[in-house]
Image (cartoon, rainbow, N blue to C red; front, top):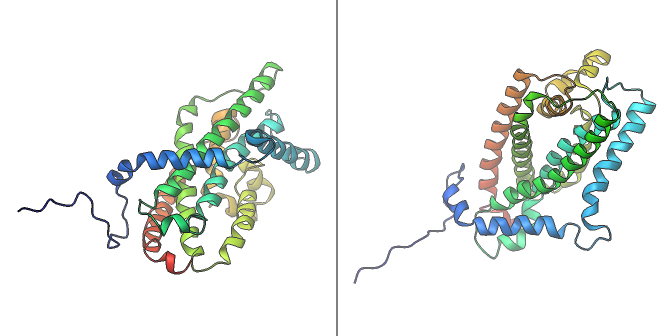
Length: 284
């Protein structure tokens, strides 16, 4: 009697760069389930619930406006400072949320990973997708204030390059995914890294042109401008403000550099993640 062939084969012997899109598609229902879990459970037992999606970017933008624009006198040209900061914070928060959440993938989900099989990369992917919901809410807040400032006579306009805005969002998500997978893999062996992530993200924000124009760093602190110019995030945030407010510059070379860096980090992130998932249960 002829034996029936196996439908699926689960093995730890895989290539380092293994991204089986067909298998991920087969587990798409699980991906959707994780996305719903991430969106619903974050603020499920809080008093204000989803209102935190509104409160966090608003208070951060207000704080930046008071400190950097009113106290430090950072000029934002014809763009209202609050709207300038809100645009930068909205795109930055998407990257930050993707990075910080994916950087703890193995540790947080160790119990799930050790009991049942599914493509491990689904979990960091679900984080990137679920954060799009939060980012969408931030954009709604931004456009609400945009309409208010526009009707009150502010000199702002949406640039024709806005059609490429989804590409910027995708780049930020992939960059956060790649960096997060690298950090998550290293944390399984070097626990000290988890204490440095939050601190490192805060430092990274200050050299990513979130609360100031990119040109300001070149004019005021030319000796340290390289810290920003070699930071791919700065070009994305500057380009986002240019598209949304027609303020700043759109550096094609800078965006190409950002795309190359993103693909390289994502490539190494997948390699390290796939290598770590085979043995991480023994070290977590």
